[in-house]
Length: 108
Image (cartoon, rainbow, N blue to C red):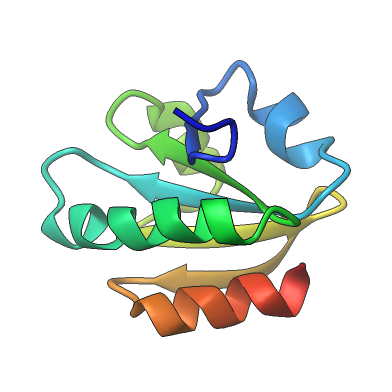
């Protein structure tokens, strides 16, 4: 597995991996039972390999309920792009590979 593969994070490492990151971070809030979440996963994996200027992290909402609540996640998949510890863009629902790529390119 490449170091650029989307990495699973949890409540304990969110601060360091996302809020204190030196690069933009796209966080995918997802669940194993969520069909749309699973459908965008291959695109996120491809984009993580292709665009290394934006880190991609995954948060399982079922295993990280407090973090999910703290981030105001009400629907999944939700993707939040963080820069310098602040949310700069949010996408909710299934997204095309093209839309995900546009988001990553814009913030690389």
